[in-house]
Length: 230
Image (cartoon, rainbow, N blue to C red; front, side, top):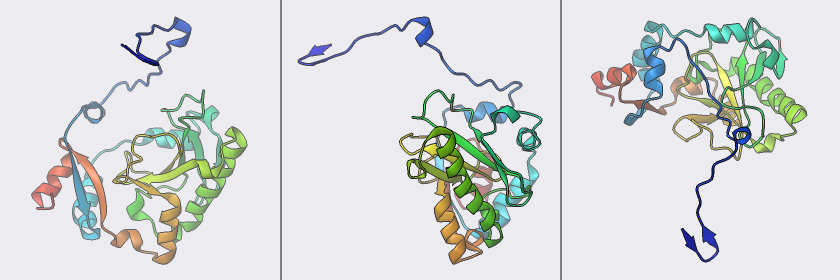
């Protein structure tokens, strides 16, 4: 197509410019397969009581393996990829590049801060007790990224997912200009806002109604439907 100063072409880059980054999951479980299939999505409004009566029992009944998280924390895997660590067992964390980022450019910068402390499943578990941990992640994470990659804190989107893809507390650091998967309003909660909310009310996330999306095939959606909540 050609129209005035605009035209379109089919371009075939040489092999050295046509690299495709791939992530392999092997052996993949049915949950992995379903994650990447296109399906209808539904919004859920989960009250604090819904979490206690529906979501938490469901999480506890599932066998979600997070051994790979423990491997990172124990440095039996990916130790060479660690960007920063605060080793404190209660308020420390490890900062590591996400698999989605190949570290070759900063446009899609993506790192994950994984807390050392076990037993904090998600946003719902957070109280004022966890403020030192959250402040450490926010401040030290920004400082480490500035020092290593030269990206200022004002150019980062720092947030938690609810619901998370795995139930061990972690925080996402992405380039602000990058439209990262899961940064939409129904899933992402800015870490600075989380800290402010807990300073206002230590039990904020035990009380608040949280909105999140569930795919049509997810068993948790069926639990909410059975309870007349979806």
